[in-house]
Image (cartoon, one colour):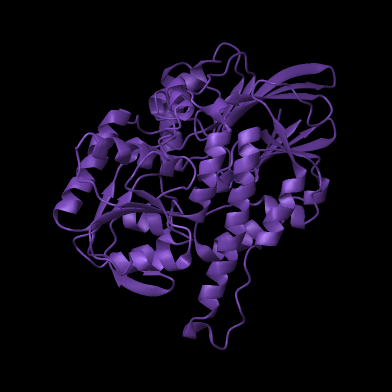
Length: 464
């Protein structure tokens, strides 16, 4: 049996791990890589394996860095099943369609620029039609229900607590008379976050493929992050500015809305308009309502009372049309604008940033990890000048980063997660993390007696 690490190796995005078992090929995740634009396009377009040779795909969750290259996989010949939890299937259908629409819209916008004259047009990575073709291959499976994706493999989804529908994947494998268990963590959530159930720790695992995004630091308590976000809103409103938040439309947006709801209900901040400017977030709302099985007890009570945190907020408006979105940038009054994408690489957030970044009264609030070479990372690094759609803008606004809002486990929980199977674990592979946090986590695990930790290179093949 082999594992090939074709994505999220020495980086956080583009999750793709290919297993060869009993002559079959099983792909864990098929995410988009995000980084330098020139490298990103070619890397996402061309797979290091023949998609037609893959027998099955298992998807851990719907975030685009885990699901977003499925349209290319299908377009290049894959026609097998794509297994996911039922909530992930519903979210992926709308997220992939939205991603295809954004790919087309961004290509059209760039092709209109005078600087493109004399050059060939930029083609979108894939279209909305390509994305919608994926839906026919999804197979929804409940949590903790066994299924057989390829011969000799019994799989099961386990709660990951990261976003709606997110799951770790347990694989019971029998090959050539040998039995073993592989555990793919997907993205690991955190305990006591609002909305979702807590992640389930692994047990009795032989080999683990585990994320390491925040392997170098524990997170602050979620309540401390709430206070920090509240203070950002208060001081920005105090100087008459806007708070602009690049946020993933699934998970982070709902948490931020929930926090703002609490702040204004308790009188901690003035009641100001809050706009969620993401068509995807509008569609996501219904998916949240359709899947109460993913919520913790407190949120299920909200749903029963028709008081879901993402909906029960009189100052909240979901922006639907482009004209409504553009109108926000004509206004000068204080407000909060939450818009996708979370790394400020595509979508409406780019227009809000270019219209507000040069005003010192405003704040750009970075509420999640930012991949290297993305606009979100350049803002988080507080660069004085940034390019948006090829034009240079001087950053005069405040930039506030709030790491404690992360839906990823910190070093403390990652350590606990790995140690849960230490008695049986033969090797752990750290993925979905840059080198510094991954090496820090490796050293931490070493101090706990775990010597069998490997940080695989991109496209590295490991025999098990």
